[in-house]
Length: 94
Image 1 (cartoon, rainbow, N blue to C red):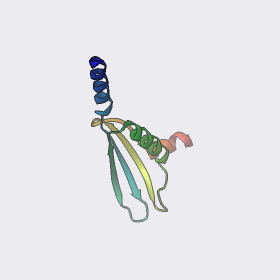
Image 2: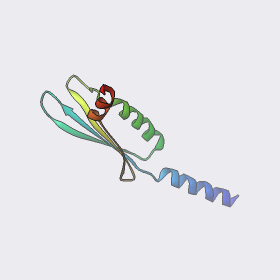
Image 3: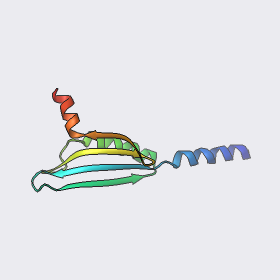
Image 4: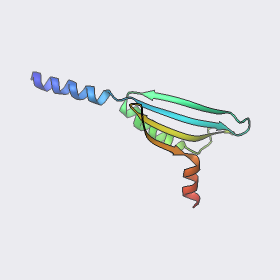
């Protein structure tokens, strides 16, 4: 039984040891402001939900003048994926 508990604790440590970070670049088209919003979590569930939401929001307007220009996804400090609104628009517009 002790071996099972040890394996379970090692598995939990591996699953919860990752750090997920998101950088969201926004731009205000009227005033010309640019801002990078940083979000960080250790929860895999939250990271998956946030990644899905940010993938859908890239290129969309958050308000009348503020738009999400780019999104970068990091896992343990390493860049895993980067989305840019221009590339997405070029894909759909041909």
